[in-house]
Each structure stands twice: as C-alpha cells, then as structure tokens.
Image (cartoon, rainbow, N blue to C red; front, side, top):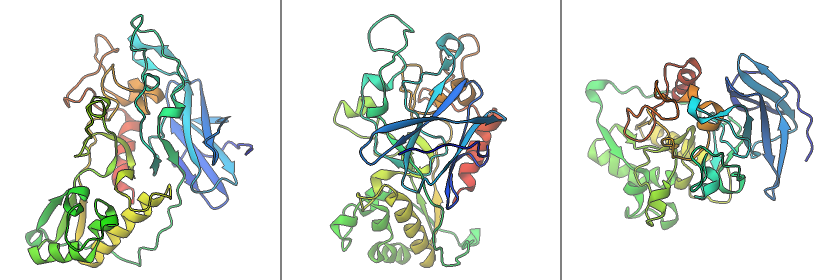
Length: 335
C-alpha cells in the first residue's frame, strides 16, 4: 500500500470518507509531528506524516482509502511527566473521534507510559502497537427509511433501563447466536416483551466502546457494566453477532435502533463523559494521554504528574478545554 497524502481539512475531526478517499484530522496542542498509521490485511503498519496543521488540528487527505481501513496515530512531542506531558511515538493511539474500534487491549507493559520496574519517570519505549485496538474508517451511509424521532410526550413516557447483554443472554425464543448482542435486543420476542410491559423507551447502559481493566483480567473477570469508556463515538464491539466484519457493530447497532423505533420504542443512551479508561498516572496510554494529556484531563495544580480525580476512577475529563467540550458535544450529536 502506498498513498501520497494531501493537506486535507482540519474539520470534521476524525476519519471522514467522501467516496474518493479519507480525510484525517486530530487535535493536539503540544504535538511537534503526527503520524497516521495504516494497517493492511496482514496487520503490517505503514506510517505517514500528516502534512498540515490548522488551529491545533493536524490533518491530511489520503486518496483511494476505503471504509474498513484500520488506523491509529503516533504523536511526537514533549515527554515531560512532571509537567503533565506524555507524548511518546512508541505508543499507538486511538483516534478520539473513531466511529469504529476493532479488537481490545492485550494487557502488557507496552501499553503503559512507564516501565513496571525501574527509575521513577523513566520513559517506556516498548512499541504498544501489537497490544492495542485499531480504529476503523467508516461510511456514514445507512438507510433509516425516512424515520423521524418519536418524541413520546413526557407524561406518556415509560423508561426501562436494560443491559444489552444481560437482557438478551437467556431470553426465551431468542436464537443463541443473537443472545448478548444488539440484534438480540431487536428480536421480535424481546420487543413483544417490552410492549407487553407498556414500555415506551429503552435506556441502554453504556454501549460506547469500553475496556476491561487489567486488574479485572488478571482475576479472570470483566467490566460487565461498561462504565469505562475509551471511544465516545464507537458502539462497543463486544455486542456484535457477526464477528467477521470490522464494521459489524455500527451496522448492527443502527439496525437495532431502527427496529426498536419501528416498534414505537425510543432509545436512550447512558453515556460516561466524566472520565476515560486510561485511569490515573499509573494507567495505560491508549488515546487522550498520548495526544494531549494536559488538555484532555484535569491535572493537579501543584503537581501535574497527578490527576484531579473527581470521579473516583483515576481521572476527570477537562471539559473547560474548548476542544474537549467540542468532542463531547460532537459525540452527543453524532448519529
């Protein structure tokens, strides 16, 4: 694979397919250089420098790229942990605007900023590429069939909170291959159950891409509830029925929403915008930390090596920063 990037546009952020190629843009106020990493069908990585920067957004247009293309970023910039900066090109980073994320984290020393043993603050230069998920270029086209928002009056609204996996995993009449999936939630038997209860809206517990923490995996456990987000635009890839397509989670999620709407059921998402799955100063470097840690997170005023942990999870997103606020607003508007 060889592509010659053009400057492209700073907006929209993320990977945008226009039918002839893909525009990539990522915000970083501290980067000196940003590389786009493209992966072929064999997992071989090719790196291309994004050729331009406008208003702190690094961007480039790559002709002939198609939906399904896997990618990530590597950032070159200051490595100054005492000042809250963690740029390290040995870490492959997820796009904060990724619409689709393929795979999960294979917990290894490589995905952390520092070595597990050794001098405090010594930079960990093990390549994290083999151990972290990939972003996937998507196509926004989907046949919604001209449907409109249901807008059930509040006085008529009955909300039922459900967990995608939990509500379908042992549901009678749902085929085994659909249990625990988005398509399982849209199965006629499940919809009939909702309607019989008089429900008008389904509130889904977190379905944005989340991670299973290292300490849970070491104990043979998982993060069942999903309050550990790493991708604010990507439907969680653990709830798909078709595992041989990188884009399955998007299509199946939209089919689920469309089917529920056609049955007269609104869909409400429980979202987690207060923090991310990157944890505190001992946590992994997967996306935001390596892109612009001091912009994305609230850091301790007296010692920016540490985080302000208002959430009890290790970090708190810095919503006072305009680009971070824009990220969350764009996520809320995304469909």
